[in-house]
Length: 241
Image 1 (cartoon, rainbow, N blue to C red):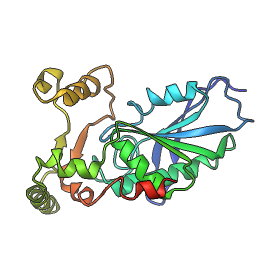
Image 2: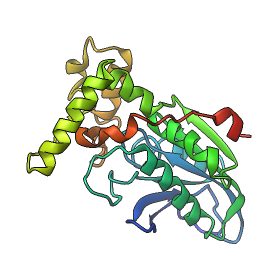
Image 3: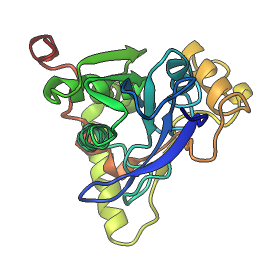
Image 4: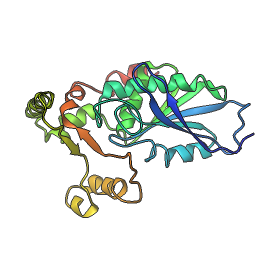
């Protein structure tokens, strides 16, 4: 029996390393096997913010081994350009996190689940549709990033927005500075009048309650087009059985 509560690890992939924190249950014993949960962070967030410090610790206290990881291009994980929110890549990351879990002798490979928060919820469901090593999936206020791009992020004008994205990408490959959008107002006062969800998100992610160095809440506009044809929930009712 050991007394460790967390461990930082690097998940190996063919493209770059994924940074992750593992949370251990009370009285953790390496000679035993535990059910494991992958905890996936929101859009533009990081493993230390919500998925780890909130849900990771709570689920570990309930008896699970929990791994909270940074998405590719974000947090302490590899990938360039930074602040890229690529749904296909984010789903692919889950497979390598599962690969890491099944090599750990204290993880029961037949009892691996996933919990996704906000955008991580949509990605979790999408990953679980085809990653059969994931046995159970849960979502907290899950967001379908493809729909979010078509709707709120484009002002309900997706074609015009895609034209702007194309123009920005062309400008950047010709040497222009990247256009990185802040997903939230800088302060709670600045969020006033934007809607309750934005105010509450700002009150968490932009204040000492939840603000973390790697919790950028930023998005590279020129790389958003990849998400416009993506749907987290297509055929989920058929494949999640």
